[in-house]
Figure (cartoon, rainbow, N blue to C red):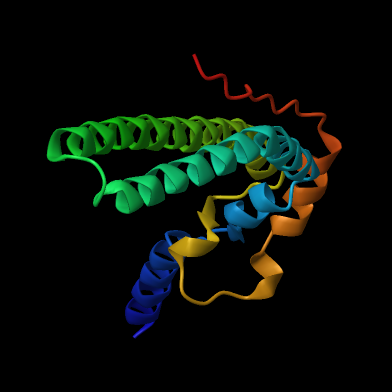
Length: 177
């Protein structure tokens, strides 16, 4: 009987030594980026720089609408070749305008992606340091789990550290060739 208890205690000790608790925390990376003061300031700067081009695009759009109205009005007066010439000119102008708008949108979309990537790199460095300092075994993004206790959410701690960094988020203004 003693042998049975000794064997049982031995197996319990072996099994329990393999069941060491893992320290897991979660962080909301999206919130860290979206609420970062440097990111907010940079996006406001981008919006201000876009206004100049948006006004130009609005004027060009009005001009294109007038061209289309003129084509519609002149259908009864002009012959088919003249109408086709005007339509071709309108289509060329519309195509150029559409390409300019697409380039504009693509440019600023890429600038924002680059800024977000810069912030993400800084967040990863902060998380690595946090994990080493606090003996964290696993850090999950808030999109990677369904339910967790608020006590394991380190978003606010990382947010404070991130806001203390002087991160320069640069962007280039759109320049139409």
